[in-house]
Length: 94
Length: 320
Image (cartoon, rainbow over all chains, first blue to last red; front, side, top):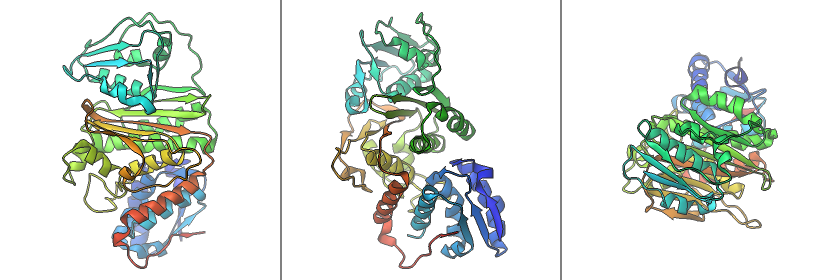
């Protein structure tokens, strides 16, 4: 299972959508395309914006379907980051 | 154009200030001020600075300021933005803990730097800084992505010790919300456009609920929700429309609504035309509500609002 450390690209406050998009396109999508699983490690990230998480995840859910969530594991998320991820994951499946 | 900086202009009474703004002759700006004392929200300073930047060179004039609080305007950087020379002398204090002077932000990199380097100067506890960072980031990115503002975003903030509150003003002089929303939704009035822009799942970039890979149409709804949960004001002014979320009184349960017109609000469509968008938010730092609880509340409202097309089964994120 491949691991991507979000902090490395986004810092402690993950708000830069360009960074999120880059992680999705350059790192996450190739792993998923191979059918592998990926760990998104939010260690040291103390908060994130909905825009950041949307830019990171929404297109994956749209492109690969909600089943892609079986291939993605979110690690070391605090309550705030979990909350934002849940919001995006939920509304992308409405 | 003519603008008067009054004795008092806060989000609660901002209407009078906005109504006094005169929009004729957009190449020139004449600024007048209250003679004795000026006490204004950062939104007012951001608006005046932004107006000055849209004028032609040396098109800004200001009468000799007499108000005692003119030093405050100087310290916030207003005269530098307006390129007005003054003889006001100030002692340069460390700004930490009190305010963020007027700042022009043009792109994502500058915004990230602003959030990383400037907001910590307010010396807030992490849980207090969280909503401020969130609000500044989302509102300023909106400017870059939607407004086409030639001057970028003009931002400033002030901490008020007595009320333990941060007030933020973020302004652009771009195309305005109506133009942006009209790209996907037919709207006749600025107020209709603001109402749509505040509705979860609606963005000017697409008619598809949930937005595009880059825009979800959730940003403004989040900001309004943060203000409402904290029982504070939130003001958005674009074109000739003002929407002002009113404070939820202490003791009254906070409900979030997908339709901003269900919230207790004021405003209307009869204000002097603002070319662009101006947003003012107050954030109380005494809030007992945890940010994570607020997110749960937002999620419920968001889902409720757009769930007509809810699928019966969907997967959940897995956390380890």
